Length: 418
Image (cartoon, rainbow, N blue to C red; front, side, top):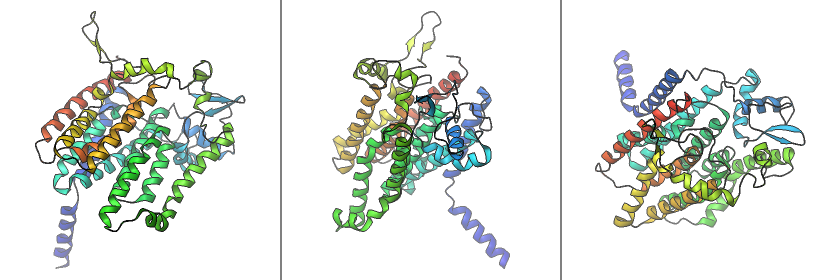
């Protein structure tokens, strides 16, 4: 009898599992295997571009600078000392690993785990918005975000540039997820962590605030913002502490609470225009929309492995986002449309800011910097798109296009075939 009860309990447990979550993890694992099989770069490989690990090791040794130059890394030079030029949050995560591994932390494995966490949270966000009865659509959108977009390029390994962006991507998704649930403390904390990886994620705070307020109003018909602040102000403490840690570290290294080091990279200090300047806007904005060009001699197309190509082509979820906003504007003018338009405006602001930067990402396939917009673009698409199954073939078609373009482009670029 006990055996039958245990068996019945096990069957009930198995039936209760959301098998799409293991499917998400499996899909990421399959991609990483395909990438490794064609490039020879595996999650178990050592990371030569390990700036964050070197920084964590230096901190544990009681030193803020790296103590020496590493010529193959992008390092800030300030007062004749060498510093990591990227925002510091990934080094926070690597600190416990550096205790055991020194500078040889398993960055590629860590990056893969962070990818899986982000993908699972993306799926949970999709289910929360679309409903449990539409889990297949939630899974499809998760795959579109991770394997049908330019996201694919930076989840492939833990090189310093890509680790920072992947951490930010996951943390932004988590922040949006918790904002949607009205969990202000966790949302603001993960948002602050994301800013410590990619500073321009700061511009999405209005989306998080609007989303939390909408959720609180649904939960409480007598909602009052002043009373909410009075009763929940302490939930913002973790966010504030993270921000204070950035300010303190920046000031200790560079004498400014807002300077994390990028302005002291040689490539920016050697130019009169510096890191950001209006003179970069015209050419960069043109590159944001340029299409691949046919090379007459070979019949192949040039995908420009520096300074980007059309951001909407390489991450076609953005096309779905625009279509969804247009649909919502015609058929259902409500607060979701307002929130979608807010996200679209911030997307454009983000693009303009990126175009003021001296480069659009250096060597890579696609338009990597613009991927920072995709977590909120996903959310905007989900809340504005048509309900029902009629939209599914469109999403499937966009996913197939995005996956084919990015898997080929990613592998070809890492192999230096293009």
